Length: 195
Image (cartoon, rainbow, N blue to C red):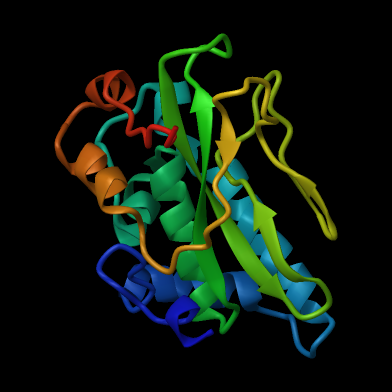
């Protein structure tokens, strides 16, 4: 579990701003039963208070958790970095997950979608998706039942089974290669399926 509890360049909960936000979200909670409340608070904060860059057409392109918090915007990948940071800062193991989805809900092209897995004492690993709700997207925190933003609809879409401690390099590259959210949206990362 240690890999899912440490700070890193993109999950930088050691940054004063991230650490302060993590403390604020944990304020008033104590005891083992509060872990679910803490995770829900962190999830809902990132889902509802951090705007999805693509939905809102907001620059700058963010990647590090501290930058997502500073600018209050990020693509799904960046929002997942912030959620992992807030959870890890509070001692809750958190990782990164990906889905391969159709960009237009109708076949190619495809892209990766970023979300999180959190280790809950009562349930084990549980996936949450803080990308932000909008019409047709209704992600919730309802353990043990997952309520993710997107369901698979196509034979080429996949729930990738890995829980990563760090972001995939191709995700970091996509976020850092462009300084405009529109350019990121036109160049979303993808992992082609093996035959």
